[in-house]
Image (cartoon, rainbow, N blue to C red; front, side):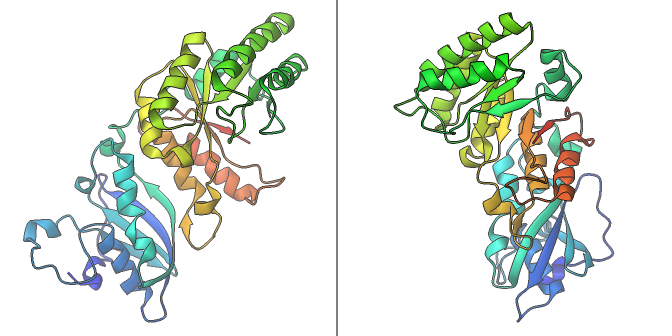
Length: 333
């Protein structure tokens, strides 16, 4: 099939299609329509040249470009192209080789809609907003802080900062993204000491407190740490979802620990910041929800990060809108 054969403006996506919206700028030697066909081909059954082994039944699985408005392109994918419960495979298809093709100057995955038939193969959030609210038993916004300096404090000083934050009105204290189990602040010791400080603060204030300890590590080590957190009685773990990867995140959620999963998005801007190339934060938010996080950083619209208020609100919407039977995820500034 030629690239142009993947373009069908008369096609209407079915409820079982996975639909992607891209921002696309073609190379000077191409056109939007041809480049869109190239994206559809490369992300489904096609490639850059004629394939002698192609069968008629394979053509039924071809993605279809069904809409082009300016540089906005919509592509529908038959659900049969995707393995149930395999988030990396979905991304290898719709956010894979197409980004590096010569037909394309720039490409950004702006949005995607995954059909219920595929969504039901994922766990989604265990707690979500309602479950988190049940833990804290308060209706007001939750107030959290991050241990600073983000890295370098010895365990005793780390614990002191956490305790003072809790007894002075903070609900949630969390590790930062690059604190794991360094020599000056080992994971096991930090977990034990900070959890005791949390319990002490709860007794003194009469309020529920939470500690989001970072379990980010090689997958088996991450699971070992999560088990330790569950065993001690802490309610939360934090994980750097971009750097551990979607497979590791799914593995963590699939253990079905009695733990709220707080998702840190460290590294996301390498994918999301360029407005014409990469993957939008809204898409990452949807994927994180599908994988099963309960909370996710979405940006603030102010401060040191680049996102606008409109972008942050889009991220929040992605975490709360209807998505099969998945619980809404709590957005975190």
